[in-house]
Length: 127
Image (cartoon, rainbow, N blue to C red; front, side, top):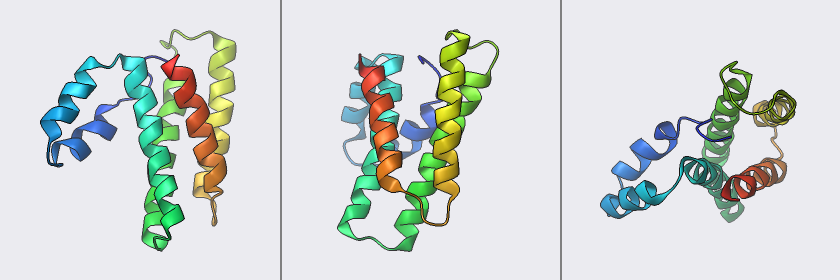
């Protein structure tokens, strides 16, 4: 799934505003595009894990929106005719993406399920 996701939308604004961002930028430069994509999934999962500490509805809404945005980007990327992944794999990823997007848009998203899908995709990208 290399270069499937525009990682700048997920890395750029967030890390540049944080203290010590030069270290974060150096870390990102050492990552392959697949590893950067894995980090995007990991970051989305961290936002879900933070919900376990009991943040309110705003944090839940943000986690759902961030994950929906991530999976929408994945869905668009695998539907792109120039995507070099095998068509069968692209179709499978698109199906998973649609399920996760629907879950994110639900009234009470199953964040454990969403985090699990993020973890599976991140692990596959780190290989």
